[in-house]
Amino acid sequence: MLSSLNEQQLETLAAASARRNFPKGRTIVAEGEPSQSLYILLSGRAKVQRSDSEGKEVILAVLGSGDFFGEMSLIDDAPRSASVITLESCDFMSINKDSFKAILMQNSEVSLAIMRGLVKRLREADKKIETLALLDVYGRVARVLLDFSENVDGERIVKNKLPRQEIAKMIGASREMVSRVMKGLEIDGYIVPLPEGRLMLREKISSYIG
Image (cartoon, rainbow, N blue to C red; front, side, top):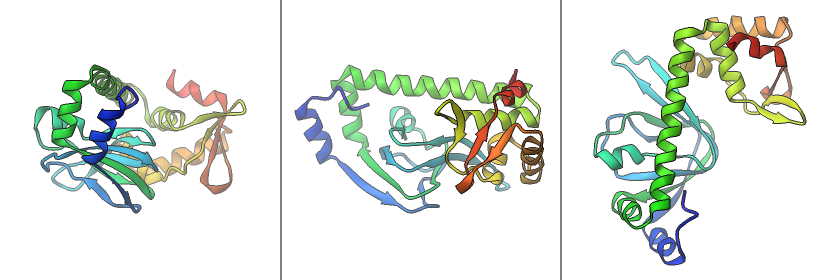
C-alpha cells in the first residue's frame, strides 16, 4: 500500500505513525468506537468479527501480514463497523487519521491501493453471502478450508490451525456441527490431519462447493 510513496512522504508518515506489538487475544479496535487510526498488520494473524446484542459472534475475515484495516471509518467518519482481535502475537503499524487523509490527497497510488482493498473486501463479502445462501454445512466448511489453504509442493495445505469454534463463527453453525463435519471429511478421505494442527486437503473436497 505504501510502496509508491517517495522518501519525503515516508519520513512524514513515519513521524506520524507508531509500531506496536499485541499478544494473542487482544482487541485492537472495538465495534462501535470512534476511529482514529489506520492499522497495517506487519506480522501475525487477527480476526475481524461482529457481535449482536446477545453476544453471538460472527467472524467476517481473518487478516494476515500486509493486510490493513480501519480505513472505512477514517473515510466516512462513522464508528468502526467491526472489532479486530489478535489470533496470535501481532506487530502493527498505526497511522493517525490526519496523516492518512493527507496521504490520500497527495498520492493517487495510495488511494488506488485503498480502493483495491475495499473492492477485495466487497468481493469477499459477496462470496460469503453466496456460501451461506447456497451451500450446506459441508460445503461451507469445505469453502473455509480451501480459502485458508496454500499450495505446498502440489498439495493444498492449511498451515495454521483452525479451531472448530472459529470455523463455526465463520459459517453460522455450531461448534458441535463443525466437529461432526470435520470428522466426516476425515473418515471419507477429504482431509488428512498433519502434525501441529495442519491439514492436507484432497482434491475431491472441491466437489462440495461445485
